[in-house]
Each structure stands twice: as C-alpha cells, then as structure tokens.
Length: 415
Ligand SMILES: Cc1cc2nc3c(=O)[nH]c(=O)nc-3n(C[C@H](O)[C@H](O)[C@H](O)COP(=O)(O)OP(=O)(O)OC[C@H]3O[C@@H](n4cnc5c(N)ncnc54)[C@H](O)[C@@H]3O)c2cc1C
Image (cartoon, rainbow, N blue to C red; front, side, top):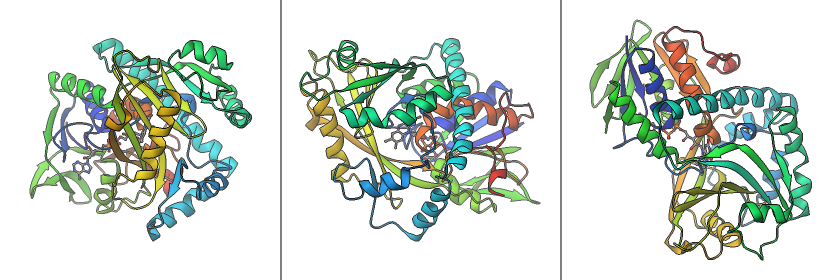
C-alpha cells in the first residue's frame, strides 16, 4: 500500500515514521527545503502532558480582555483581525464553558500522555538525542501568581500528575543561575515533564525513516488532493499527479485549503507566537530545565549551549511579521531571570503560527472521503502530541485498532 504524507513538520515526520513501521510504502511531500521549517522550528520545546489543555477555558475571555491594553501582554489581538478571525473567536468562546472545557481537555490529555510514552519508546529504540532536559518548573514572581495557581493545581491533582510546590530558596537551589534580585515567591515543579529541541528530533527521525525506506521530496508544494470517483487517489504538485492508495494531510494551516477542495472543512486558525534563541556566555549558569514565567506566560528552555525564550499568543491574520512588542517581552523576561547569561541583543528572533482549532484537540484519522486522512490542528502543543497522534493515524490508515480511543478526536465531532 502506497501512502503520501503532505507536510514535514514534526507531525508529518512522525506520521511517516509510524506508517513505515506498519510496513507501508511512504513518501512525504514538503514545500520547504527540509523538515520542521515552519511552526515546528522555533517552539519552546516543552513536553508537559498535564499542562496540555485547551486555550478555550473558563475565565480566558476575561483574561484576554484584561490583557488588551497591556503592552507586555502574553495574549494579543491584532486590530487587523478579519471576519474569519472573529468567526473563529465566536466558536472559541462557546468552547470556554466549563463542561466543554472538561471534554476538550480530556481529549487532549488522552493524546498527550500516550504521546509521551511513544516518544520514550522511540528514544529508547533509536537512541535519538535532541538536547532534551528533564523537569519543568513554573516560576512565581509574587503572591498573585501563587494565588492564581489554585485551579491549575486542582487540575493536576485530578489528573494524578506529580508535582511539588517549592519555596523561593528551593527554586534557587534547583536553578542556581537565576538572578538573586528578581522577585520570586516560589515555584511549582513537575519532575516528570521534559523539554527538547523539536526540529533536531524531526531531523533525526527523518534520517531514521530514510534508512528504513521513507522517501522525502522537498520543494514540493501540493496544489491539491487528486480525486477520482469520490476518493482520494494521490496529490498534484508542480502540475504532476503522484498516485497513492492513501493521502495523509499533515500540513498544519496549509491543510485548510487542501481539505476544503475535497469538501472537508476544518476550523483551524493561526495563533502566532514568538521566540528568541541566544547563545549562553561560556561562564554563565543557564536554566537547568524548562522554566515558565507564569506572570508573562513565557518559557525559557535550555538547549545545549543556548537558551530559547518563547511565548505570546496573537490572534490576527496569516502574515508572519516580527512585531517589536512581543519580542521586547521575551527579552525582558530573559533579562529579569538570567541578566548576565547571554547577549540578548544577538538573539535570533522567530515567529510561527500555531495551527489552532477552537476546541483544542487535534483531528486524527479518516475523513468522509475514502483514502483521505488527517493529522492536523495541534495548536500550542503539537510537539507534545506528535508521536501519539502519528502512531494513532498510522494505525487507522493501516487498518489496525489504535491503542487509545478516537472518541472526539476525529472529524465526526464537527458533523
Ligand atoms: C512560540 C511557540 C511556542 C510553542 N511551544 C510549544 C511547546 O513548548 N510544546 C509543544 O508541544 N508545542 C509548542 N508549540 C506548538 C508546536 O510548535 C506546533 O503545534 C507544531 O509545530 C505543529 O506541527 P505541524 O507539523 O502540525 O506543523 P508545521 O511544523 O507547521 O508543519 C507543517 C508543514 O506542512 C508544510 N506544508 C503546508 N502546506 C503544504 C503544501 N500545500 N504542500 C507541501 N507542504 C505543505 C509546511 O511547509 C510545514 O513544513 C509552540 C508554537 C509556537 C508558535
């Protein structure tokens, strides 16, 4: 059986790997010159299944409104937001009610916890190294951050995710590089969570996949899915038809027009985020594990001899401009916590678009078009969900039963 995967972000690369493990003949078509060149490129790298939750949550609308007039706001709405953005916001608002939130969160957790298991299996089997570090620590600047942790702790308890509350002194013991003068009320430590360099992992898995026979074609922009007699029979790129028994669309936001032409509507919208990557000074003590500044919702992740600072959720159009205000926030947060650790003026800045569905969980598996499958809509936690989603989709395409239930994770939920 021949399968074409469209898109070589982290989701497409993992999908190709698991399809090949099922014995299928796999070709990946990617419009860029390599793997993980778009949203998977500059993300924060955090894998924290307990914190994989929908953006649509009770209290979020009020929080977003309160951020509107703050220059260092972690959530921003561009005034240029189009009617499509507002339609998406209307659907998102409906998903913010508590019962919907609970349903959506359970779906995401199902994928994320399964995904971490798959990642660990893969890592053990292939020996892939991707600048990973163990643990995830939320930094709480003051009493307000501490008080706001209540609901998050309740949810962690509910999901039996191990964590420990730490005093400021204990946080500084675990993170000796933290500024001595930055206000710090304490921290919440999740020892089982982890982080790693997502594009590095994608490269390694691409190589492992090629060794096992997966073909990658770069610079191949898929124009449409080819249909015959109501079924998908391949894809067209550069005016040329590539035939296949099955097509898996894993092209994040690029999936929307491809699927729409087949009559499959997916309410995915870009939510932009920014990151800065900078070399650590040789003598500096950087972060020992992934950190999250709760007040600014900004992550600081260690990658070998660099650190990455990432954050901001910005609703607006599809264009990817490096706006100054969110970049200033990244530098401020890094300078607050690690003032002398790097020359932040030399940072490489990046902006990416999270492929966000209004209700949060990704869409996996079959569509109502025979031969057409999806692995899309991973939003702000696609790295944390990539291996699990890919394994599930490969199982569905090859006719095996997935190990987790697909209830609420297929396109059926929008019917
Ligand atoms: C600032 C920021 C921080 C983040 N932090 C985290 C984090 O800490 N943890 C986490 O789990 N997630 C995080 N994410 C989210 C995560 O990066 C995404 O969910 C994930 O990268 C999505 O992967 P993907 O493969 O679906 O998309 P992409 O990486 O965008 O890949 C899609 C690919 O499809 C290709 N494509 C599109 N259309 C076509 C076409 N027509 N023909 C051929 N190819 C096509 C594109 O070129 C692209 O390579 C973050 C995102 C941002 C922006």
